[in-house]
Image (tube, rainbow, N blue to C red; front, top):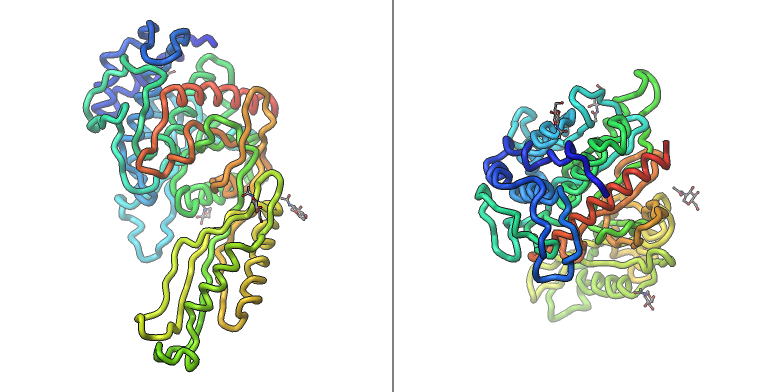
Length: 444
Ligand SMILES: *[C@@H]1O[C@H](CO)[C@@H](O)[C@H](O)[C@H]1NC(C)=O
Ligand SMILES: *[C@@H]1O[C@H](CO)[C@@H](O)[C@H](O)[C@H]1NC(C)=O
Ligand SMILES: *[C@@H]1O[C@H](CO)[C@@H](O)[C@H](O)[C@H]1NC(C)=O
Ligand SMILES: *[C@@H]1O[C@H](CO)[C@@H](O)[C@H](O)[C@H]1NC(C)=O
């Protein structure tokens, strides 16, 4: 892999204006730095990629800024500045408020998707591009950026020259999904400036709300209907969409579907000493849940078993009162059917369990879900995997080829120890470069 000189002018120099610590990080950096013995690991033969410092500075800047779902404004504005400095044409897409009561003009609660097109003053078109996308929101709580376990105060300078490919970087969002965001921006910029792709081949999209209900991607998807091309014509159609989520740099062949909902049990209150005079909603609910947890809700070769998590239970008023009401909330991971049919197949399986337990006492309320989501994993040179988690893939409507790929492991993504190694990020840059080129050439 060769990189042109122009492509080296990424974050190290350009993003200096963006934030204080960014400037501090980059000032002390020659863009190409030492490639000497790298120390404690087996990568003595490994070359330090020329973009290491810019990639790590970008990643750090994103992780430093808290962006728990619902409070993504600061990170969106940071990204707008960064991408503008990278010579992209950037648009902040403001989500219209979902709560009618909240003040539409209250800027502090504004939520923005970040859209970017390569080139200054580029045409903001969608049709026929390869969309490179991930999300900028994270789960709570905020965990500061740290290198090999040592937190680095936001805004303080950091000299990345001692970093090796084995260095461990942690912090909330470092994996899910700011690792993907930083690697995607780096890869797209390198390809475009080399130039291996044309500016009109791709665009970037970083959305909010993926960790909750996908509001950001859903809003973007519906906004596409407002961008007909030519005006008055068809809804724009992407050639392919590359979704960034932690897949350990493997290309996902798809992920399980999801169905959420609640089971309600109704009983009759009474004195606990005379249970036959009442009916315990809790007893009914517990029997139903027990059956549900051992029920076969469908399986498939690719996705394994449908699984049920009962994540929340409540009911009753006191130990000595027969419970009149009880409720359980479920998250079901669907392994059967397809994206359209999987939800209903599993919903029917749940209803059957409730009917067999106590049809009269039990009720079900489901939140619309989707069945297993297929992605394209037939690209040479990638290991493949199947994911058990949900993504924004089903929230973007359209008839495009879908890829799901990114650095880091989902197994740490929402934990206290969320983090990855430098090599994971760098491998992801290389992976995204190959994937973007493949998507551009394949669909040309
Ligand atoms: C951005 O554009 C300017 C003006 O054309 C150029 O000098 C600079 O090198 C470009 N930056 C990148 C990262 O390509
Ligand atoms: C699409 O355009 C309509 C009419 O201008 C507007 O009311 C609606 O909010 C727009 N939707 C999005 C998602 O931008
Ligand atoms: C799937 O469920 C069946 C029982 O219904 C069980 O025998 C099997 O081990 C499960 N497979 C996995 C991968 O958990
Ligand atoms: C899902 O399966 C149904 C029934 O097998 C089929 O009619 C439908 O076209 C499929 N949908 C997709 C998106 O594959």
